[in-house]
Length: 398
Image 1 (spheres, helix red, strand yellow):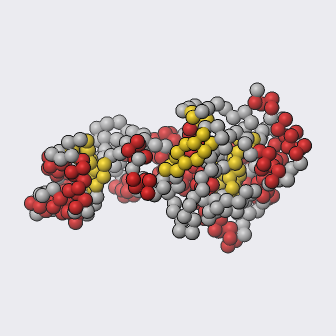
Image 2 (cartoon, one colour):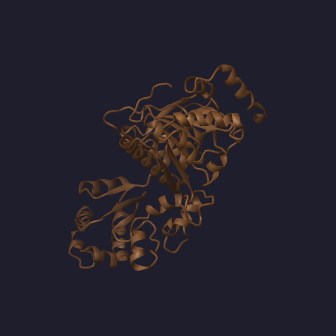
Image 3 (tube, rainbow, N blue to C red):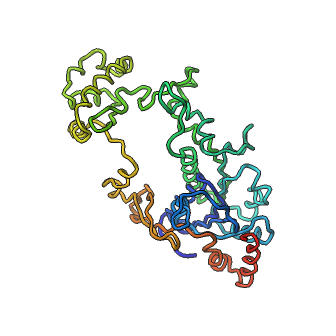
């Protein structure tokens, strides 16, 4: 196959994933140099938009740098092709419900028997064990069931979903980390393994203090909106032209805030001088700070706070952050050119390697764009055999 640049160059991935958690994990593998071969149905269902020149915008980012081949996994001929790919691959990634791969004839017992070095990553809603193992799930279902939504929102409001598909994202990140660890383990043992990542587990594990506090006290945490359950002041405060975020997690940071706001008297005020006192008098302190910040613009507040190194920030809109000079300096907006959609920009990879200073981004593939290339270069299939395979796909595409 074509050579790729990055710490995972030389690693071949067979990608059977869909939705977000699985494609995100394989996108990171591709960003870091792995050869990701995405298996797609010849009759891929028409997805919802938005679109750019007929190509779904969502796919332009999440499927970047991958190769697309089409296989009809209900046909034995196509299944044999997939098995040949698995035989030579390093990693197999899928996010079907448990049992699906076994019914298709590609369970771990089968794939490991033909390729003992294969790393089989299985992402699902609830994992391969437990009473919910056969249930399907999408992101919001997991956000709710994990407890995350009970922690999100205003104290007197309804439980809220996060503004992004965070359960999918953290599951994909855990899956990527697990695959990287399994590759290292294989270097020591020579063996691959089956990895089971559940979206519920991944999201639950990210609830940090809420879990241990509940386990110890037996009480449900209350929603605190933009505040923090233990750090005060911590949240958003009004300014003349919007809001500013101020966060003080230690006494020293609060004292710096007092100096920045020219309210050093609050340092010795028994209501605010220590962390526990500030927690007990959260409303009064919030009112005091808000009274001061509301007299200044956002820019003026930022300058005041930065002078004393008080952690602060503005609430950017997406158009603002996409044009931010820090994002540009970190090369977090990158460009690719798609054969149909044309040039487009998207978020880059946040991992910066000293040995690989330039991440290479290829465009997302069109459906089946690399079928002939992969089957020729990777499996050395004769052209007549490839023609016969593709001819079998035509009735499905009508």
